[in-house]
Length: 177
Length: 177
DNA sequence: GCGGTCATGTAAGAGGTTACATGATTGC
DNA sequence: GCAATCATGTAACCTCTTACATGACCGC
Image: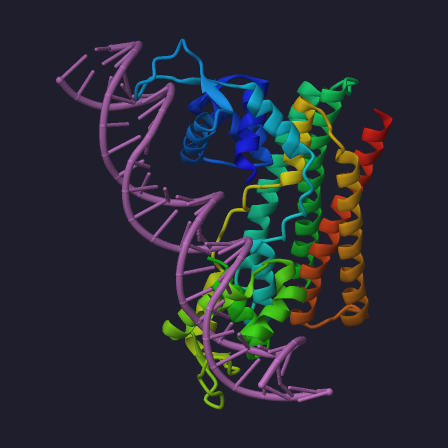
């Protein structure tokens, strides 16, 4: 049940239409909670129905017409309450690690190329994060909000760094065998 | 579409019944592809239907009676083919990072306790992995299969280490603010 | 008016979660 | 016989993914 809260967060940062949200997800919140426009439109409908957000009155409510939403007080309260909820970490579900486990049984079948491909992808993502850090977080922010957002970005950076390290090791190991 | 392949891998390692698979998932393959007994039974039914596995003839096929499965040649081929498939890394979906992002907007509301709770969980998981490493992978294996399985475990260890590092930093940061 | 783009939406289906149901076996 | 446990299964529901549909606007 995180998507509605991701949307509320994004809308609090800036009122937006569905498509704008989709784009912002692609390069910001979506780094940590990915989504597609179909999910977003559905969730916007539900949130509006529930009185958490409303369409700005300026927008024409027709198909093909832009419709901007803003968060209502009930939405902000809902989000603040959600932040305090405990929730266990999700169990891991990683196809690459699973493939490697399968490869241990039926043989590594051209997995080297796939590992190298993933390594390049993670290196690209890391570069993107570092660029954002340089652009938005140098010098390191001192306000509470900036520090928290920087922490979240750091999470992304560390996670990509983990993958790069593991993949590098895995490639070396496979080549040596 | 990874669950059937996770099951094939587990069954190749050792023919099992549904409940045995569920237990082994809880402490081995499930570290990287979690599942529940309901999913497993459904998938076993499909795999049998598709001719990838079969119930061992010794078992009585009645409700409440143990039913053991083994992988057929078609299942092994299917798994070998799957290992070679390219697949992009899954987009990240992490509720904790999302919560922190929301907290940047509506205020960190007792998140410190939650971060400490997660830290303890990840430390526990890391300890479990290290125990397995000590038990099953010392000295480091030299055969292909053992090396690959060790690599997968190393992935788990590194991932938990990442979380512990990030959480420690986050807690320190929050306390300082 | 035609193609491209912006923008909102619908539909079908796979995968996953939660809760519950049913039968067999064992210990007391 | 009864409770606990082992074991297999059903059902309902929700989320997410993929593919497609529809309408408005703009440049040419």
